[in-house]
Length: 363
Ligand SMILES: Nc1ncnc2c1ncn2[C@@H]1O[C@H](COP(=O)(O)OP(=O)(O)OP(=O)(O)O)[C@@H](O)[C@H]1O
Image (cartoon, rainbow, N blue to C red; front, top):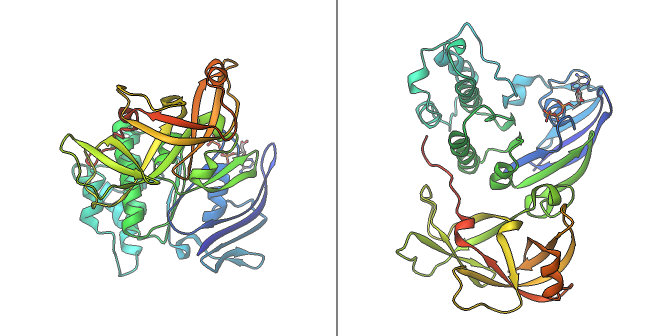
């Protein structure tokens, strides 16, 4: 099941020239520098980009747009949230929400009360959009998109006006909604750490061209994201061992054990997969295990390759640990002092507190 997009769209300085197939399940993020064509691509998928002369869009085998076919927006059953929330100014929040709700199919897995509550809109229902802050308007636009019971959610920087804590909550909520209702999402966010937290697939755009498309874990290891973000994602299993009583979790990574502070929001079942974001700067390396270290997590790994970092005194080391890729940022002098090279066995040190996610369960 896929979303297929082919298009050539002349833009101001270049053409958006895309031929990409992405899974129509889970969360796909489109990333790239400002002005690289992310919004234009979302508009092509939604069918609201009028200049897309040669576009072909199909979703799960149904042709939405082709040479002689253009399925109108409402028949695509999209939940669409654009950069600037387009609420109806003459309608209250409740009426704006009802607009999508009433046009939805009879089967409505996303319940009114659940969405209103999750988006913190109870006290705003009788307000008009002009009486709301930018962040509140975004919350309404997001809730309206969900209540329309979409088969695909398209979000363009949906949480950009929210403060950090609210944004973290909504990013987490988006992941839960996508999982629980099997709702595919294509989204754009400039917050790359949020993208890395919840996305499954990444499409990297540069001047209208797709320069990378694949699973998040592997795309993070490719340029230009690799240098820009220097972040890895490890997917680890909750250990079946008895969990410790000290607010920590024991996790398994390819047969090796990890300890991280237990996220306070997390209530998932015992053997869930946990996604850990690891910044390369939080990874250090030794040749041997170190006794008496405050760093709890020491994992056996192998050097795959290395390359100069942005700062001339630093080096990025690409490692494999428990079968998964991991980046470490170390000084060039440490690289030399440890006599590291491709294939060297090393011990990776991950501070448990650096793996602590602070995502919120409640607003
Ligand atoms: N309708 C249009 N006609 C011609 N050029 C356009 C049109 N819409 C956008 N552009 C130009 O196309 C380029 C890509 O714009 P787009 O908004 O898709 O980029 P973006 O990656 O989403 O940027 P940002 O991250 O800043 O939102 C920009 O140079 C923009 O000025």
